[in-house]
Each structure stands twice: as structure tokens, then as C-alpha cells.
Image 1: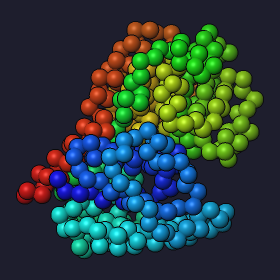
Image 2: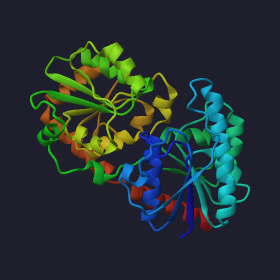
Image 3: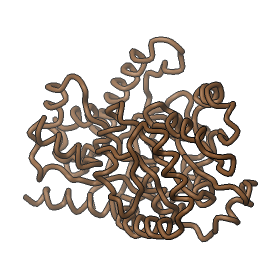
Image 4: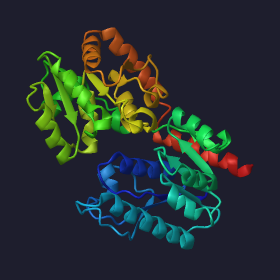
Length: 383
């Protein structure tokens, strides 16, 4: 099996979903017999913890830290410093693979620029596309056409790639994000989870796990919480310090809103198991939410065997249907509040959608995802 050089620009390790994604990607490919080298920048502010322990992953791949120009810790000119960091890392990763990889190896990244540089030397480049460009379309299209393989994480992006960039469908793989069942399908009930987390046993508990960015729709959930009676508690688990301060300032007066703060990723399954209902309230007001995202949170929710309420937006409705989730109109706090009440009062609905989602997500594990990508690259390589 070829070697796979996985290039990731973000802080590593850190709590962000993209870094978790890179770690799980590397572990899964290595599980399938691929020799994986994860190439990351030596960024300021990354956690000092051992990455394998931090993410609770096997030591079956190698991590290489490369030099990068990093001034992103300064509170001014963030865009300039981001591009300085990104371009310098793209160059350093190119020279690293230039001297360490062979033409038979796979150069893999969720960023197109390192792959663009690599494409002039290496024929097997793979772009794991998580976003979608909103500007510099021609430049982006030029880079895309030099990349050998592309995966897209939802159906909207696949259709747009064919329409906007004329990318052939046989060059693209529709491959959503994934979940680690060993983390989220844990043998623990709701009551025991609540006891471990010191949560009340006599309340209906609504849980959102993730960052508190506006495009995540968390404000809609907070407004919905205001419409619920005091028998409900709505927990927001996650968020940076600044986002938590903003959230407390806006919603701290609501007694049934609990801002729990950032928790270790290993604790998130307990919070989800403790819930009566899990909410994915993404907004339709921003394209990143409405069209581009394929949230790992959705798959983690599905593996938790708890009912899910989600916004009916293209990025989500293309991944799952009404048999496995309760859809609501995005940015409508009243409809979301009524849906929470309806789900908590309907045991048959809870059992039906929870089981359907659980059965569906069994096909979206990290290892099955890695198997499909490896097979896709192999098929194209033989043509």
C-alpha cells in the first residue's frame, strides 16, 4: 500500500473539529494498512498534551511538525497573519513531501494550496473539501483541475462542483463525515450519565454540543429556551471563553439555560447520553451553515441513540431524512421550542427516530469512510 502524507494547517492538537477530523482521518487510514504521515505546523498555542492521548487514538501513524511563520496570536490584522501562516506552511509542507515522498505516494489535504504545489510533482493528490469558495472562483477552479481526486462532504457541494467548476463526477467522491462508535455508542443509560455529570434526574434535558458561533444557530436555541417551562433545562456544552462571555451576557438571565463551557472531547458522549433530545439548530442565514457544512456533531448525535432536532437546510437534509431526525424551520425559535416539547412528550417518536438514525450512521464510521476513499483512489489509479 502506498504511503499517505496528510497535510493539515490547523493547531494540532486542539479542541476544534477540524483537528479532531485530521486525527481520526490519520488513525482510520492507518487502520486500513496505509502508512500515514500527518504533517502539521508547529503553531503557537497548540496544546502541549500528547496528541495520541489528547484524542484517545492509536499510535499507528507518525506526526511531523514543520516550521511556519505564525503571528496569529496577535490581536490585530488576523487575515494578514492567517495568510502568512497558511502560505508559509503550504511551502514548507511542499518541500517536506518533495524530499520525503515518492511519485507513488498519496498527498492528501483539506486545503487546496498545498495540493496545488504538490500536483506539479506528484500525480496522486487528494483534496478533502470541507468548505466552498465564495470568491476567486477562477483561481480556485484552476487549482481544482490540477488535483487528481476530490471528496465532498454533502450532495449540494457535489452538484455545485459539477456546475460551477465542470468537475467530472467520476473524479469526485461523495463522502460525508464520520463517527467513532467506540466513543459515542457507550453502554450507559440516561440516569447513570446524569449522575456522573451531576445533572438533575427530574428535568427534561436538551443538549447542544459544539462551538457557540452565530452560524451554528445557537442563538435560535437560546431564544427557544426562553419559551420552555421550568421543567426543561437547555445545556450548551462548548464554546471559547469569549463566546461564553457573549452568550452569558445575552442569555444569562434565562434560568433554564445552562452554559456548561468547553469540556474534554472524551466527556461529550456522556452529555449526549444524558439528554432527552439533542439539537442541531444551524442557521440558514449564512452559506457555511446552509450549504457547506457536514457536521461531525450530526453523526455523533446519531450514534448516541437520542432523538435529534435539526434545521431543515440543504447541508443537513442531504445527509439525513425525516425518518431519522425531526426537522424544523431554521432560525424559528418558536417552532424549535414546540418541537422540543413534542419530542419529549412522545416516547414512540423518540424510539423511532433514534433507532433509525443509529442504524443509518453505522455506515459512517471512520474506518468505513477510509475504506471507501482507498477503494476510490485505487479504481481511478487503474484507469
